[in-house]
Length: 319
Length: 202
Image (tube, rainbow over all chains, first blue to last red; front, side):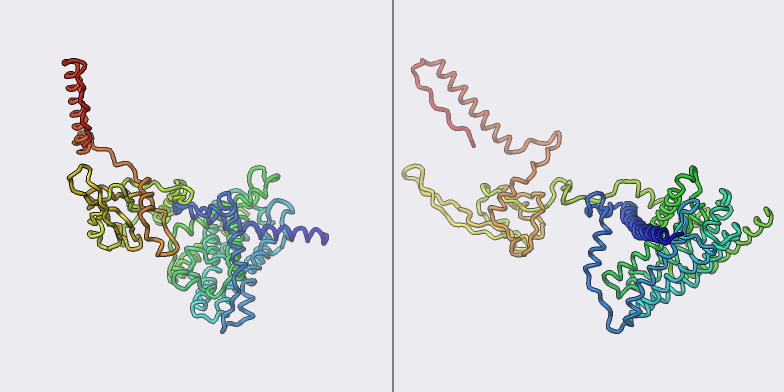
């Protein structure tokens, strides 16, 4: 791989990273609007308000960048980057189509991806700690508790797929994938997706940012561009979670004519999952903190372990 | 405890179904500045003044619970039409203003007006940036008269409005007198001058 080729791939990944989260964000505006019998943004840009997020970005860029007096300035300023960049790094390892259509094929892909995704949550923790605000700290600690609870089922569910494929490489898993993995790994898929939602602090698992009680948690003190970066991190997180679920459980680029339009299949499945993420947000109320923990420890982890056992049995039986 | 559903998670699925169904239906948002709302008949938007009907009886100003109607007037002498008769006086409206910052849209003034000079108009776009400008004088109130919708149609077998009955009675009387005059004229010699028929308006 020449240096030029590496650069082209990185630029393409960056492009995906900059465009797709905005597409998801705009979809959320519109879908959420219509699900609540509203119309969502309609003015910005003329056609169904397509430029709403651009307008939002301009607005955020104009706002004053305030750092609270008692804040730990360096950590406070660094936090949005820590929250955002891991998702971009993860995107490099996610295969888009068959063959070499991937930013960089990594042998221990599943490990790499899950480890780096975990870093993103550190951004919220840093933000909450550095803000010198009790609500922020409360939000940050809830984030930490949520990460502790939901990282485990997520890892176990991913491990089940790795076990089934006999490889940790994301491209390798897709190479091994058969259609009957869909029912076989269904429970794992649900566990992975749910735990991922919780890790992104998306509703109904948005206790750490609960805007009506702890005023957006760790992000309370943020304004302007830094706040916009946190929001972008949320949507980048949705993209990464949906793409990962697609690759691990829904067969990524597999589908009819996957040789030619495999990348389209990946994007389609990712988009469908992103719609589900939005759908869940509109439909369900927020879980209480204890319900959150209970769901993880007594619901998802046993399910993930059960999936692991099932995967093991089938694997041995068919070997 | 709420009632148990048959399958675990049936409630969750129902929630998803509700939002999905809502998404497929038309949204209820009104596109107000572009699309004007369809207001129900007899909407209470603003009070319009039919100035020509006003006799400055002051009933509206006195009945107004908020005292938001201001009326100024003076008297004018109408000279006697016939010699020997007395001169008459007549009220002339100088100012009629309603302060819509005080008005509570109770409509008592419209109800109480004995000469049908006040009407409800559905016009509602008269918000201002200054509370002082919410006091509207008689020219504005008169202009709003053009936005007053026609009164709703009567019921199928309702009694005829009094005004129509009176007008028809007058017209009938006039026609009868004219017919009588015509028959007298034709019955008598043609040289007899026919009397001018009396003006029949009430």
